[in-house]
Length: 415
View 1 (tube, rainbow, N blue to C red):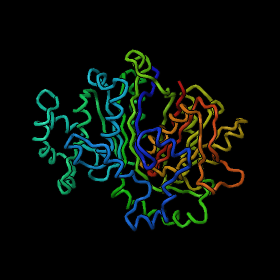
View 2: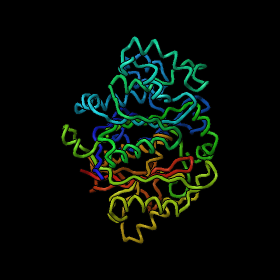
View 3: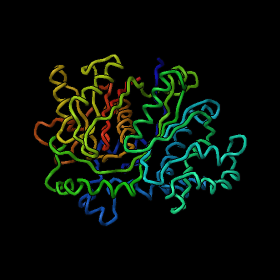
View 4: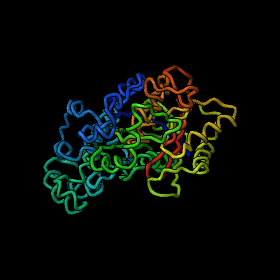
């Protein structure tokens, strides 16, 4: 088994563009809820809480016409991918290698679909990109995609531009659904660790459109009523959907050293599991959470007490994840801080794994954590992190819970 490291990454979110800007906003405890009357009231006014600022996005012009006029989440994905590829001479490496390309997105009927069709239909006979061939064949791609696509006049294979523009010739896969971002990260990790690949570009992107209406009417109306009276992450099951997009370069550690890529962290383990129950019920069984966490710890060859921080969701009803991890702290005589950023970041649906990983990478770099609570709403004897402070962090466990009954536990280590 090979060691897998994370090189450059780039994210965009409500808090800003780039990992540094986002992280600074989190340190200041900024939340989309600061500006909102409530999640529901804002939605009724078409002011979506947690959305990436569109005016900021327009500051980054995209030259590729197919992407520029394609679905929003494809544009988000292309922007973050281009920022990563520009770093550390990655572009020349990706062009000359068999690196993988893995994309995770929410499938909103006309999202990032048909990457392989993009290769077959829109590339020239040598499987290479040229603008004339691509644009002349985009229309043909309509017959290979979901029937909703022609209605909206959006070419579903727009994501293929990432591969074609940056000449990424290796294997590729698109994953769809609420846990797709975690799957994309885990698939690339396992492929590299098992020596099937030496590197991969991993992309997650979430845009709120049809999906937002779906989630808005589940329980957000209950959540929005709590804003004025106070939201307690320790007793309330809560979330509000948000936008997030990230790209990461994952590499075999020896390969990163060979090509001069600075490794920011090592992925020690990643495990994902589904649990039985009603769809959208989110009643996460404690034994399921314990099983997936123990598997990841065993894979990494460490125990719970070896972790320095856990970043986690708190979507379950009842508060399963918090209860289990607080109990483990007691059983191991440990005092591992539990950071729950959901009130600041929202739940970025298919990109929630990227959200937590991006935050973990910055914490490993800066050695500083932030409060999990909205300003002025910290309870007595808080269970989650309750202040911005410097701490020594080397190993972070990341729990990501999906709304469609899946969870992932990843462990990353500072290099």
